[in-house]
Length: 168
Length: 323
Image (cartoon, rainbow over all chains, first blue to last red; front, side, top):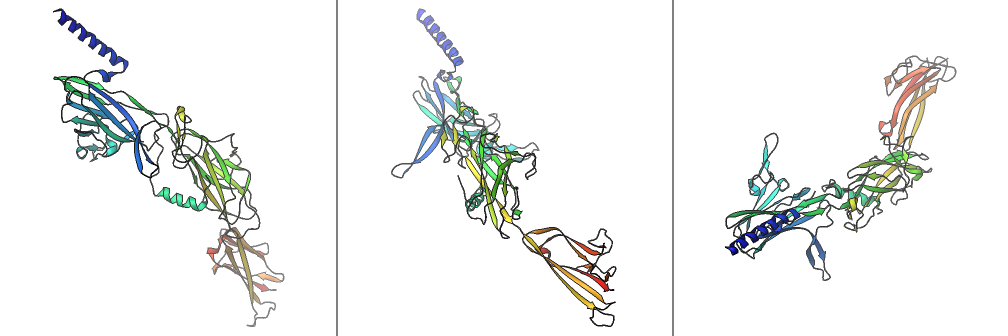
């Protein structure tokens, strides 16, 4: 009985702590999945032997026309599997999705052109103009990208989702 | 960066064949990104957001200078002949630019002489130097341009003497970003708008375009001939004989004679034959009215208008009778 109460108190305190933490902007520490996003630029250099070397560097000096690579990293740090894992990332403001660059191992990728209300494969998306005419959506129409993991994310497992954008 | 006109031409062709980047997102803009993950743990739905990652847009230093004037025809000794350019900030931040003139360029036939001062803001938008236009002084009134904003600039040169028709003279306007210039991609740390980094753009932070003056002289040649018909069927200049004068005016050179007109007093001891004046075979009235010809004050006058070499010979004829 005592143990049970202590467990409840401990759990309550834990929830309270998590609840408080959500107010100090560390929401990635709730639940069993830790999720982190980063933005990089691709640096292409020629090394001493004349080989072309590509590396990523945090995006710090981005100017219009530059390509920014967004990477969403996630891992299950809990003890139970996470099921039906769905990652969504809006295409950031002032950025334009670069066609064909969304990538995510073990995930089915779909896109939205209406802020995440509806989703589809690129060939399924149609833009309706004010006059009612329709045209196939292009990469610059995409507002959101979604990765649906095909399998459960097991404890200790990690994954990532990546896409490229061009600064307008 | 100094560029010769030939290089500018090829550069212009290159730019024309590629999409020109409209000014993009303004320097200093913060672009936030956050991903979301939704899942279930033992049937309980969980929704979480990632960290909010902010990328701040740096300032790109880019400038374009574009000649607006066509080739400007000039004559030797002309003063204050202007060339119009548009200077546009094609970067994404507010930037000051310095301006410079160079009229001693290679590849032309003469060097125009920069007037004092030689760079003006075309305040009234006339495209030409006007009384109200403000002279430019480096370091004093360097133009400050918002992204995509432009300003019209005049280069003003005097034309030297002793030139030949068709001679060309070049004059170049260079605009340079005050933050700095360099190779594309060079970074000026913290010197962009709102403390961002400034990055040198594709044009290297400066740009130039060249205008051209062409010596455009025109000369009119006038050849006058006379034929006499006497009352007896001969060609003796006796009283009562008619003299038909024919005058051929030809413009030559590359220029245009503005408002050319021909005037010829009737010779002494002759009388003008009323209604005998013609231009290129067509009759002209004697009254000083709407048509090109007139006889007044003892002289015939024909207005030829603006005349250039393409107009060909202009033939005027009139008749007098010997008293």
